[in-house]
Amino acid sequence: MVLNYSARTLLTVWISLLFSPLVYGAEVPIYSQADIVHPIKAAHGMLSIANKYAADAGLAVLKEGGNAIDAAVTVAFILSVTAPQAGNLGGGGFMLVRLAKENKVIAIDYREKAPLLAHRDLFLDTNGNLDTEKTRYSFLSCGVPGTVAGMAYALEKYGTIPLKRALEPAIKLARNGFLVDEQLYTDLVSAKNQMSKFTESYKTFYKPDGTPYKIGERIIQKDLAWSLTQLYLEGPSAFYEGAVAEKIVESMRQYGGIITKKDLKLYSVIPREPVEGTYRGYTIYSMPPPSSGGIHVIQLLNLIEGYPISTWGQNSANTIHVLAESMKHAFADRSKHLGDSDFVKVPLVALTSKSYAEQLRKSIDLTKATPSKKISPYDSKNQYESLQTNHFSIIDKEGNAVANTYTLNFSFGSKLVVPGAGFLLNNQMDDFASKSGEPNAYGLTGDSANAIAPGKRMLSSMSPTIIMKDNKPFLITGSPGGSNIISTVFQIITNVIDFNLNIAEATYAPRIHHQWYPEELRIEKGINADTKHLLEQRGHKVVYTNTMGAAQSILIDANGVLYGVADPRIPDGIVVGY
Ligand code: GLY
Image 1 (cartoon, rainbow, N blue to C red):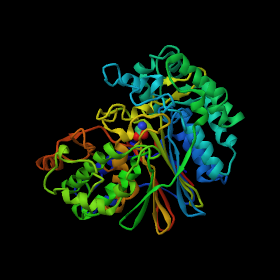
Image 2: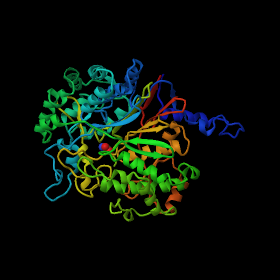
Image 3: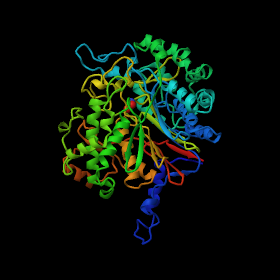
Image 4: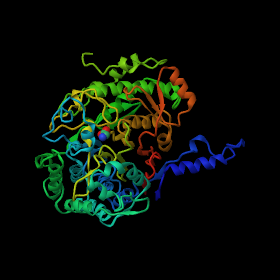
């Protein structure tokens, strides 16, 4: 079964509704509210992914008897070919895995690292000003990539298929080409100016006449096929010590980057304990530092647990008010305390404790917005780029589950393709706080906890999350969207648990976001003007924004039925299952 749950589906439902007796006042409605949006159902295994090629290949792995980790690694390599905006070899990310036999959740950190020659003031000019062209679009913006090591590690530790099997479909798609989808075409149009500044990138992703490949046109990536083939022949060492490493280091030498052979050789994946919390009887597992995501998702759930939001109603002014006030606190804490826990002490236990949430709740006024300047980060004595990250959720018939979020940072990362190797380099160095208090591309500020240091991992917001109920997987979720990732994952969880929405309704529901600074409450256009007005009366500066996040989720009910949804905020998301 292959079904695309896209915005078009919702449009069809709306059009049917328009002509239904319900709209024209008949007594018996054809659709009840609960029937408006249905997730996709399956019995054995399921994948929710932002790309059809990856979904089909992942499903084939599951049907052959591979497990969720086998499917995830196959998917990640395919996305590096068919969704190069975020799917990658030259980036990094996080994988959360629920292992059915051991009944435990583990976290794999394959985030990029600052090169050894990096230092705190790397991006400051002689006047101490931050050079954002360098943090975002130069070879200096690249962290040492972790994806290849991460995928090889996951497969070796927890998979059942050889790396060669996981790479085969990606190599074929790179060598023989694939048909461009709507998302890739749209992103290629947006990135054209920046990409045209570097010949190698331009010739990789645009036609000889300089125009982007259109929807349905075939794009062939011979150099990328070469890189993937090196991995096929030599394993991950090709990327970190062999022929691919040579090309990365040569590009750094030629174009002013600082990643050396030593950086690549020393790169290592770190297995971590997931951050764990509880919410109204559910157990939440999410990504620990160097992501801020897990800590803040749990902190937000702890805060909200003290309010009767299910009585107040989903997206009512009361509910949005406490969500926004809670988010301000979480992002204030993020700015000061979050960084790579291998380098700085992150007060993880305190920030995710119920008692800290209780203390914060006392400062939340239910009738008016607290100005951001009156909110300070935790005291221990007591953007907008286009969607650029890729999340996928997978479950197999044994109940092994994967929530994987990986990224190049911006859409197409630094927009720099390694000459002869065909893959894009990340610009993840922009996720460091390169200058204390100066916002990064997502408007997020940071301090010394997230300052650049050699070998350190830059702070992330990626929040791959697995929720368990009665020792069984209940929800696998995650999203792209920079700082919106945290608020998106948080709202998916509350929509399901507090408002009893099915996973499709929970995903489609309009979202809100507040990140302390800039001092504005962002709302999607589906939140009505009356609610906006009520929030403004409480002192919020409310702004309608573009859509936020694009979650790919799977929910498993008490009978073991799988329900999947792909967020309609992107055009090519898909759920497949069997
Ligand atoms: N590069 C976005 C993030 O990791 O949060």
